[in-house]
Image (cartoon, rainbow, N blue to C red; front, side, top):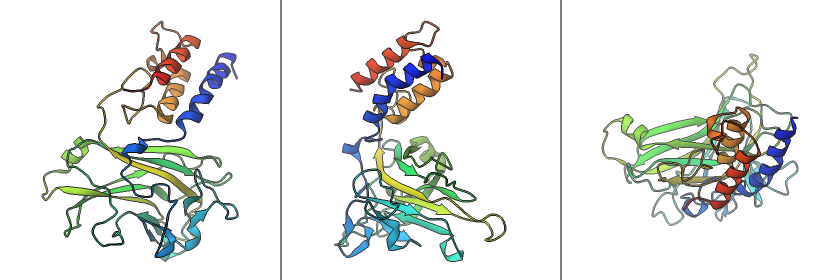
Length: 286
């Protein structure tokens, strides 16, 4: 590796450790039990606030389980490959009633009240690859109870089919413009269901069998943003906060010698740009 690149990676290593603790603003996280830490008192095989599709009790992973992968705390969720017709679709949803029946666990949504961003972490064990399967997160925007009907839905695939046994972040945003593009179909949505899932649409035993176990942890859903970068280090959405995605965006831009990484505007990419990024990142957003 080039000496300059080595120095860049060394200087930014600390930022990865700092920014890896959260993606979206935890204080604004609208998800109940986002890290799956709390089991359902009436059904300990599931985390409270979540309902499962075609998953076994063992897929609610405990850190003490053999081979378990947990990013933080003691629990995570595992999505295993399909093995038969009944398991083509596996997933979890927040579309489940609270214990007192007063409401659903689906986070509230304000129509055109700002972009909605879902983020989190996922891991594919070392040596495994997601194959012939769609794995991702679906956001279902729903109408006011007792209607509960889906107004519209947006589906996002995870960014990579293998992670080498490391936890990597993902982040997807439904913008107000995307909501407007759906059209005018009243009544407007008032909540959004969160659905991490995997789906196999091929034929079993025909050379397209699904592979790759996926673990998911530390989800976060927020609505609203500042509308743009807060400083030179705020290079990635969601804007208005500094996190792993900004560090990753800077590294990508730096290696590509993009203008986005030339923070001192001298037409070169060197220690001074790294130093400027570190300074602005440490300053943070207002």
